[in-house]
Image (cartoon, rainbow, N blue to C red; front, side):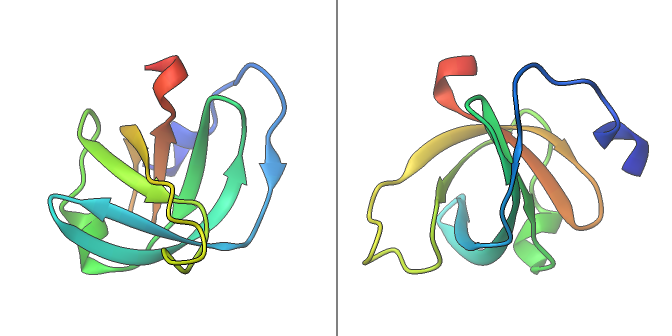
Length: 94
């Protein structure tokens, strides 16, 4: 499945490595922002929550590891997923 991430994207992607919080169906998991662009984000998540997420699902992300520090929740659509990485599309591109 890793080949799914070898697609060409429009625009620049910025490598991150920061913590984030992914929320899906009322459950939360701490993940790592692998990279981010104006249209979406790629996160690394080894939590069991990631196993329940599938392309086409709607979830939300907090772009830092502490939801009290950055309380803005961004609703996203899952575009890709492999064993530990999840591609999310931001609302403007949905």
